[in-house]
Amino acid sequence: MTSSIRVALVSVAGAVLVALVVVVAATRQPVFVASPAASTTTPAFESGVFTSGDASVSKMPDTAFVYAGVESQQSTASGAQSDLAGKAAKLIARIKALGVADKDLSTSGYSVGPMYTPSGQTVSGYRASEQLELTWHDVTTVGKALDAIVQEGGATNVGASFGLADPKAAQAEARTLAIADARSRAQAMATAAGVSLGQVIRVSDLTSYAPPVPYEVGAAAPAATQLPVGELTVSVTVEVDFAIA
Image 1 (spheres, one colour):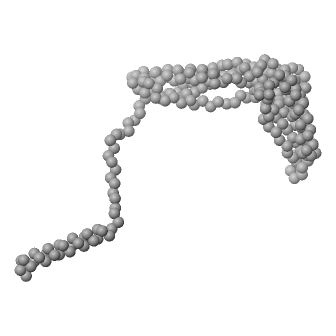
Image 2 (cartoon, helix red, strand yellow):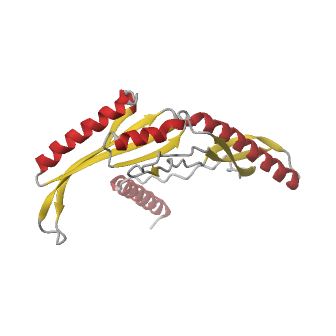
């Protein structure tokens, strides 16, 4: 085979090979590979002085929350409900006669249901009950109000608790003191560590507020009911993070 013929065959074979490669490539599904972009910034650890503070303020309660209820037990549900309606009307009338405004009186509970024998299989009667809640704005006379509600209003169970008409004001005062306490602690920590305290990064209020604990008065005693008012303690706990200057 002459050299010119060999060159021609090689050229043809190369062309065929290229054609085959093109055909095969055209029948494949495209595959895309994305390389992750290089991060231009590296997250830095946030340094700072992290501390907490707490404070308490004492306030004399200015509001009493009174709970009063009546109930009835009858052989039928309608009988229990009807009898309860009369008792509740008497109690509500006495409460309003004490000067309680409509906005300060509300129903906190009402129920009518069966009672069962000890075996739990037979209905022995029906019980109906109604619970009222009223706001009393003179804490020095709440004992007299309770006596009137029980002795003249017919309430069979009563209770009372003390609170503040505007608790947010006391909470704000305690919160300010708690933040100052946190700053004082943070300054001491920064001084000990040999750094300067910077600006506040974040502040969190960690306080959980509990409702006032009620007095369970029950049936009024012959003597006048006395409920010492005392003081309420409003406590606040905060978490404050400071930057390092």
